[in-house]
Structures are given as structure tokens and as C-alpha cells.
Image (cartoon, rainbow, N blue to C red; front, side, top):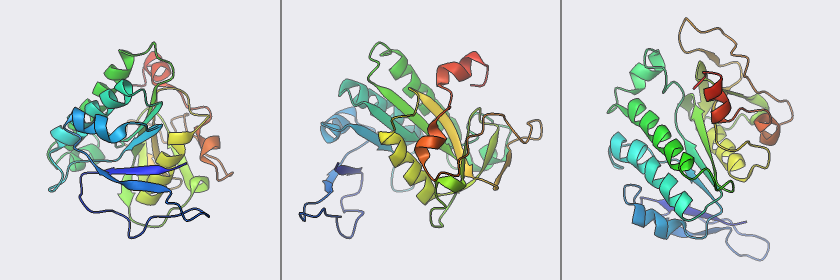
Length: 242
């Protein structure tokens, strides 16, 4: 399989592109796109079988409203229109808990947490309006506090649901999880989950128990095993957990 990097930057994020045994690149040339412009995304994503959305607001990359809300809505619309089977969006833990410390601190940056939640909800609305097409699905990953260490690996990662538990996780682990989710055969259709490193977590607020009952852990070192048993968004809504 090949990967295509879609970026708002004009230069490549890679010093060199990986190659297979025949010296052919496994990463296609960089494609620039603007997540605030649906037409731009439609042109960049043609022919994709999965999309990972990892964009977020920054001083160089647009406001939280433009990227984390409207950008997520646009990527959902593009994936549905192009009939791309899987969309993976990297969001954030604690976005449904405005009284938590994690929400309050992170939300100081341009109200980003509120806009991330609006982006999630807009994405779900796009897919709900196209629910008849069961070949299309989304995955929302809500990582905890991001660290810059090397990947701990799936054997050290815990997944959860309900947005009551969070912790810390390396960006490298989030990237590995997103890549695994993009091609997973075990993930249920339309699912949202939190992720953090096992042993580095706790309740988002004092009113929540230390264990949610929805934890997913595995010693296998395989994200496919971790993904098994996750609840769909519809199941979480029915249980009052979303």
C-alpha cells in the first residue's frame, strides 16, 4: 500500500521517502490542501482508501474554529462525497468535560476544546445523514496529554470510552494507533475512544470512579486486539455515555 501526505506546508515533512525492494516510493508526492476549503480537499483526496486528519489550530495553521471545527466538518464531507471507506480524526480527551482541569487549561488556546467538540459533532451529523452507505465509517481518537517520547507500543496503551478517564500518551503512539485504525478490520463502524499510556491516567474529575468499566488493554502488542470490543457511538449514546 502507498501513503499520500496531504499538508498545508509547501515543503515535505520527510527528509527522504521510504522505498520498497524495487526502489519505488511508498509515499506519494506531497499534496497541499486547505482544510477550510472543501474543493481543495476533494482534489487532494481523490482515490484514497482512508484518511487520517491530524490538523489542529496553530499560529501558522489557522484558528481553532477554522481547523478543529470547520476543517473536521469539511474532511467528513469530502470523505463521504468521495466514498472514502474510513476517516480517522485525532481529537482530544476531556472535550466533553468542561469542568475538568484538562479542558480548562487546553481551552485557553483560542477556545480549542469547544471547537474540537463542535467538529466531532459536525462529523457525526455528516455521517448520520449518509447512514445508508454502510461502506463508510469514521474513527475519532481522543488522546490524553501529548508527550514527545518514543512510542511505548500497543502493549502499554489503554483505550477507554465515555470521556471520564484520561492521562498522558506519546505522539508517536497516537500516530501508530491512527495508522492501525485506518486499516483495521476489527474496529466497529463509527466509534470514538480515548487513549493514554497504561499507568499514567486518572479520572478527569473527582466525581468519576478510577475505573470506567470500558477499558481496553492487551499484552499482545497488537492494536487489532485493543480495538475488539469497543462500543459504537450509537451504543454509547443509548447507554447515556455520550
